[in-house]
Length: 65
Image 1 (cartoon, rainbow, N blue to C red):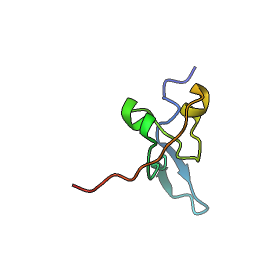
Image 2 (cartoon, rainbow, N blue to C red; image 1 turned 120 degrees about the vertical axis):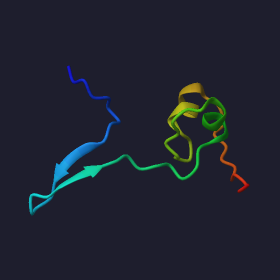
Image 3 (spheres, one colour; image 1 turned 45 degrees about the vertical axis):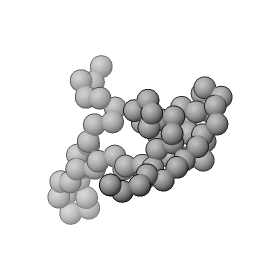
């Protein structure tokens, strides 16, 4: 069993052999349910968390403060 979490950064080598680190992409906006529960939202039209709970998935822009 691996000691690294699944969403950890990973090291890769390109064609020239140079090492680089790939980090997970950020979702541009979370739905209201995920934002309220502070869950990871996948940003789809119906996210996996809302789909699993059979609730409506609503996205609302956040005002900059």
